[in-house]
Length: 512
Image 1 (cartoon, rainbow, N blue to C red):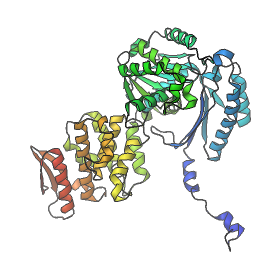
Image 2 (image 1 turned 90 degrees about the vertical axis):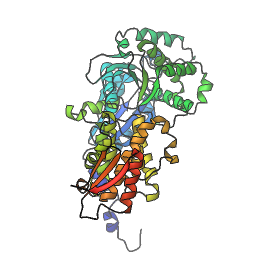
Image 3 (image 1 turned 30 degrees about the horizontal axis):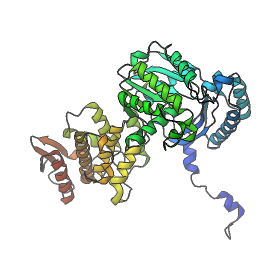
Image 4 (image 1 turned 180 degrees about the horizontal axis):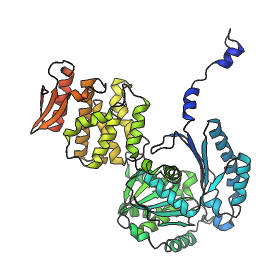
């Protein structure tokens, strides 16, 4: 104890972070997902269109291992799951989570001792477990895909350790869902013989008559083992962005890749850095299931989604109006409001820059909107590193509603907004993910943002006194005639840089 400090004084000393935690406790939600392969606790800051993950822990319990052979849960997995569910519940309660959902899926619902397992945990932890039936799991998996990819239109497949859920996924639900007892763990063979499991898989897929309705559309792949396959593919093609969400592989490339995986021995798979040892036993069956789905459906591509059952469950709790919100814009607004300098001014900035690309398509206009909301993200970074930090943060930010080209576009806008150069090594690695034309537009928008912040210092309301427009081959900046706020060497230099990027001549003239 510090000399001179009484015991009472020690007890009354404020604990750093408690105030922030108390604020979080008002809105936090948690989900414990008791799957056939893994057990996971996810804590989110709120129930919203773009919730932020506060805590994420996974334990590989393999509850469904050998389920087809025994009809019962894996005994070792039961002990591991029971103890860790208790830990997760206690942790969530200590953190003050008022709303905690426990969801159980295929292994628990199909095992003969599943009810006994649920009852024991419910009594031990004083919490209710929702055992999700197969068709509901399929619906929630598809809802999770739409939560992360709002314009998803195709078929979702969610492969867990104990089942495969399938659903037609579109802005308007068709009700076409299915749940099949196909799971790498439940079908695992100690002998390594895959002949019988493959025959079972083929027979099960033939029972779903609507699968060909996904022809020519994306197939959305959900599930940890399929994500492991995506990581292997990334490694093979030296992909520059290690983000699984919205990673896309064309069908022909996917078929070639799965052919290669199918021929690998266990020893060869073990040498693949992207595959964890705990996923190894599931890889051969998971690869076969995906290969057969591609053959039956003939989709345009595979789109991998890290959003699935948990996110779909939360998404389903939102109102129709909240579900219709754009998750990118919601997330960007929340990030801007979390650490403002003078106040979020993204909407004002977007209106001011609208004349640069009047024919911009809606998808790119949306990305520009998101970038405008994030445009003051790096205000408190070291000046020498703002461009690099803003680029990296935007490229990798854990927000829904962005494909990989969109990530590079938004990050490139912020890179230019903070003065990053076109040949900066920071952006070289991911340039292949965006077209040259889109990159030029992103840089021009970022330079316009930089000019706007130079004109106003970031204070809201001032930008409306100026006007940016294009006239033939000229870029015009109109400023009030009798004020020096909007003139100066820095303003002219940044205006000239923007004009050069657009291939135009720069003219500053009095407003009026």
